[in-house]
Length: 151
Image 1: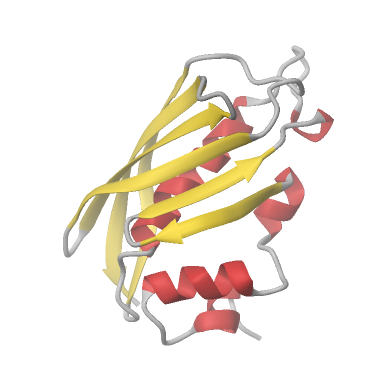
Image 2: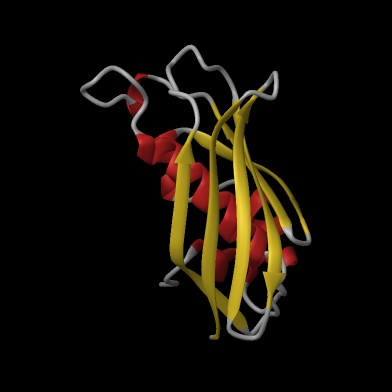
């Protein structure tokens, strides 16, 4: 049995091809299922996720848990970096810094997390992402440092 959905669907391909094949396959990674969001766009150095926060993401104080925004932002940063990797490379997030600009609620509507690579080298990558609603209001932003490694 394979250890990842990427290995099952797109092993041996460069990162951008892997991301495109993942988007095209009928299966979604578990995190997308559990938080009910979608991987909707990818190009070299850029990735976009979108979701509508609902009751499934609420915390006890009456707003959507900050982890919902963090997960979308981390996914956008990580997949933007993944889209720039060779077939022999992998990555992991070393650091994710998030700023919450506006509370997310079930009434926030469709939110888009757009990530882009700022720079990428042999061992490290730097990315940023924003989480906005359909009218462009900023709910959260993030910067990420990622370790690039050989498989």
